[in-house]
Image 1 (cartoon, each protein chain N blue to C red):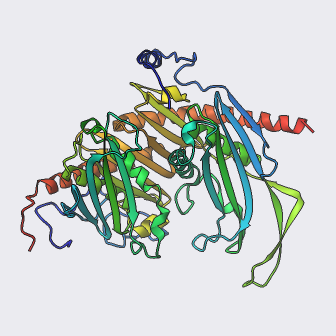
Image 2: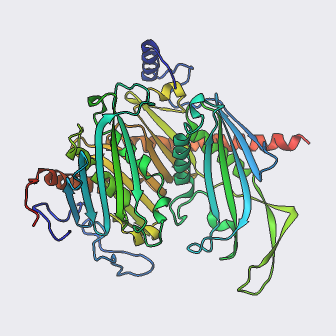
Length: 287
Length: 258
């Protein structure tokens, strides 16, 4: 919990009104973004992302599984977020559960689309190996290491980075009779890179007073009336939207927020892509 | 139960404000003459049946039946918050949504919707004047008797009616409506079958008289014009649903049932 005096609250709100926030940023500026890939050797792909003092880790584990009978040509992706008490004492025990489930649901909505998997940022049909028999199950695990606001954007960025770091072993299917479960061979040498160009970025606009700000710190988040998280892909199409915070919003404000988020998303996706590319280049340099 | 409708209008369907004219069903799964399985137009909602004060032991309660979706909501309180809770000078709202085991075609499917409780909480908290009951908690328990599609919007609308019945101070009633995107069409108030095939869904809950949106969720891929179209459609439907809810509250409780 953030404890702020009346003066501090006033200072934050006043700064946002004048387009100069307490840390010197403008309303639509991100904190410095830092990306590091391949941080967890046990996982198929992983990444650590820092937005200022917010730090999250995402890992991707791939397992062979059976596709669900209703969607035989699609793989499965599960997203789960864990809020560690190391980030904030309030997350201890069951305290982090509410936030964890809220973040998991928001990420699922923004990255996986509806139940049928249509409109998903992650292409589920690319995870299918033998239709109706075998597919990849991706377990995406997010961990909040340090929390200073804007967790959703950071987690989405970490998931994107960890997926672009993910290598799925090439699968050799030995042809079996059509009614049997086919045998599979996982290659140790050949890996398939996961295609991440369709994965959207989440842009959260936090409304404080009359204005919206990008990448709010937890101090700023404590002063928000509501926040809208829009997930936008490279084509500028909206892949999901969630609203947080109790206060109601006028429909015209929501329209405006969506268009601002769409405009900003381009810049965010480019920034993130270059950071991921830089992180991967760094990783290759180190033997 | 649905047979006994009071003076409330039975159906409500939004009219698109834009000059789109009448929308004939274009394409869905290559079938040019596709009609919805229950014979509705794309922009026609299911008949709404609402009743308040259905549970005697609760401070307030409401029953809603939209087609096959049947929901009952009870509100308890405001009552003293649990001892373990920290002092709070505004009231607390506690929401819980549960499904009966027989609500869904295959048993226990309702547990897929674990996030409904928090969604209900978020949709309602903006409408309740929490300052009016400090140190206390209001419990909202929703039970889905039968799941027939668009469950969450029905739960939200029904819960706000129950809150009003309990005499909790509200800024406005909350009406919620969802649309599904099927091919090129927007289908309002989808039934379960339509929800299975949907490519995108859009749910809005709003306070019609204040013209404020309390909760909004979008899944699937949408273009901006489509979002605006869905929003206009939903807001119009919400305001009409709001009127139905209002007239349900005004109906005399003493009206003899049998």
